[in-house]
Amino acid sequence: MVYMSPEMVLSDSFAKLWKDSHFRSRLTAIIVDKAHCIDEWGGEDFQPEYRQLECLCVFTGQEVPIVCCTATATSSTFNIIWNTLGYGNRPFWGLDVGCDRPNLFYITRPIINTANPLLDALFVLPQVLDVTTQLEAIAKCVFYFDSESACHRAVQFICKCLPAHLRSCVQAFSSNMSEAAKIQCWQLFKTGELRIICATDAAGMGCNIPDVKYIVSFGIPKSIGTVAQRWGHAGRNWTTEGVCLLLIPKWAFRPELSAVAAHVRQHLQHGCQKAPETKADTLKRAHLDTKLEAFINIGSSDPPGV
Image 1 (cartoon, rainbow, N blue to C red):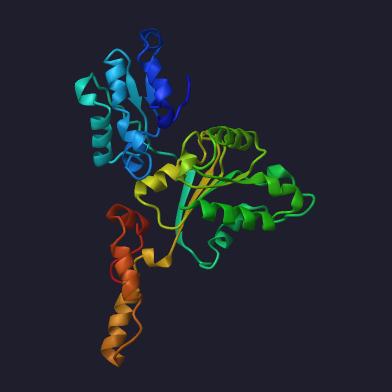
Image 2 (cartoon, rainbow, N blue to C red):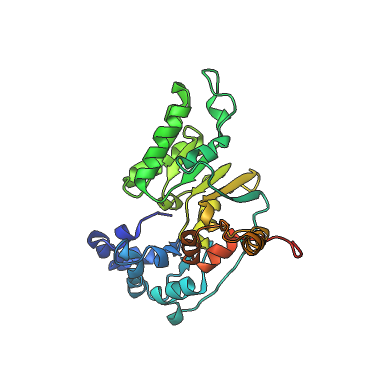
């Protein structure tokens, strides 16, 4: 099996191989991993090559199967994958194995230290950090951020929290790294020489580390699928008890019904009182993806009768 990026597959140099009948005769299958990226990353402003993979159907016909794998595919994403790879013109089999992960513990909570949210995640580090602390005492963690600059700032901050002999175990990961650097990063993470990766969503590609203990996602993700993809990298060996944490601004949480009711009572009795949240916060939450907003607020309402 050979792993290649869409850019490599569609490059001019590789096009000659696709046209070579001897090369095609040796192909067993084409595997498109993280197939949801055809939808999420395939726009013209990011990596349009994902939407151009349909040309592979022209080279391979129906003799070589094209297998798409993803842990998250909404109906719209499935339709884009279907159309991009021409599944309507070839035999198709679909398999849904579900996403039940009983070894993972999920937490969604508001950011407390808004000036530096990393302070909310330092519980992943050992309670005692000194010259005697062993590398293995630091659990394997992936911290997800929305920008490369945030990743590098996080690395700098975490290194300041660690004794000098452990600072090399923290590294940033983003799409601007070379393919060789990405492969090396995952290899060092797998062997345990790296313990904490501060990453963008580019870290989803090629990440198959079996024993990641903590996945921490900072800020509002694009969708519920983004959350699932990030969290899915914890405890992949099914024996590691993974902790998946989503740290988001307080405004993403609906005010409790009891707080709203108390505000109404106080307003009726004493006139204008401070509302449970500002209008600006209400508007920001209203613009969230509806499925993501519902996920964030699962079980947030007070029980009946409050």
